Image (tube, rainbow, N blue to C red):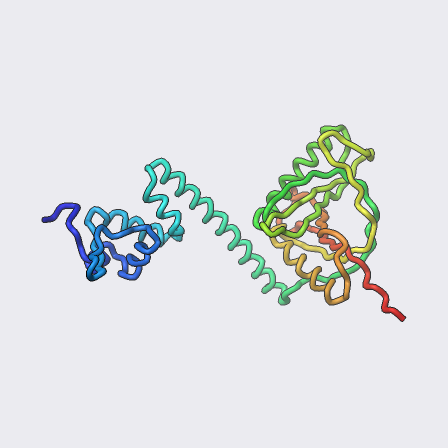
Length: 276
């Protein structure tokens, strides 16, 4: 017999499909590709020839880094659903590639600088400010892009009120929560000032001391400055008194990426004086 239901032992089927016996056993255990027959007395697995296509598809998708759970769903889905699932995998890999590329660029920056925390930390007093702001929730990997988008929306909203934006624009970046969600508040001063504006929050930022550094280059690498500030704070016995602030010194629409300047501020509380 040579039809599609002819059974083949696992070793022969593995060789035909260019898979290992170990892989086939694992796919059976996780329910991705179960054998057509398992001999109850010997435990030997047998596969039908009609299963070869699924086996090859599993091998192909695994070689492309698709998770087994997704592969199982793909095998069980109609062709249009399969395309949707593959599109989701393409998007996931694009995000992963972007993250890896940003990590590579950050490491290359450290190599060029010749030090792991390439910033000079200083302390200054920030004045109290009244600002208009907008808020979004993002994730660490989308922080730079979402912040830039929020800046654009804030400036458009302010101009729609007939007021002028007083630069520089800044953002307040909170620590990620347990779900890796990052609250971001983008702020700008107004001319003339206002206590309230439709569609915008108007808040007062308190005066106080900050530790700060100047970051030059892509926004995607500014997180290196965060680490420098937190290391300095701990070394000098300070405590944070608010979220990280980023002050954008120039306009990314008209400034080369390598020339972007961002002041990164960490509000601090001075160390308590020792008791006498």
